[in-house]
Image (cartoon, rainbow, N blue to C red):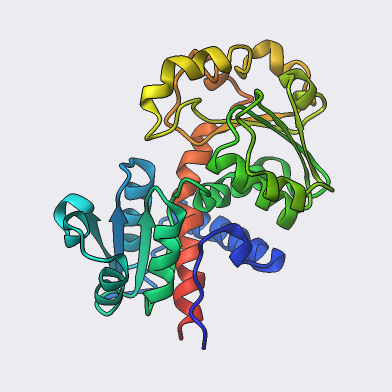
Length: 303
């Protein structure tokens, strides 16, 4: 049986994605009701971090604990990865000792190499190309509050980064229209946009993207590794903030999401962050439940 990896959303079919989102809701309700679900005792998740994180580490580690298993935090500083050991060698060794690997790194090729040489499922917990685990949480959150994304319009406001590119993949699997508002020179991968041109378009005016949208999403203007570009990017993205004025162009029941951490007053106003239209805190919590559903899906596929 071929190993199931989760390198991007496109490693799932539309039906499998719906299955995981539905299961995430069940696991969330069970936890809220105090119903234990130690489904994977003695299973071990190896967590490889080249990029720092709050939500990713806490959600995966807590999720494995709630499943009755355990998680190992492995940073480049604390392993031979930081001393030049080939990724292929590390992947072979790590996967012989754990049941699933989660990798949070910079280059997407690093993740692909882990998947190529791993004998267990590999999960993309963020690369410079995609952030599919966050999309699982975002989709779950929208479904909880508004139902299916099918036929809806989503507005991405800001940089055409890994989150934006994951929303492009999500539009394909969930059948929604995605309108991306970004400045010239900050577009997502052109091949990815062209491959989904029937449902994805790029505009320059954020108000055009927000018009009648059911969901507005953003992220920081300078991602990890781009800190030296912060000031220049702030100038380029002037006018791309999600705020009350921009939200006024959206559908009356539009929701606002942000993957966090947020720079209040830059890509999103503090007022919107804390408004009833924001489901950002539900979105953050759902990282736990959606990833547990993903872990269950991948581990069961190995049986």
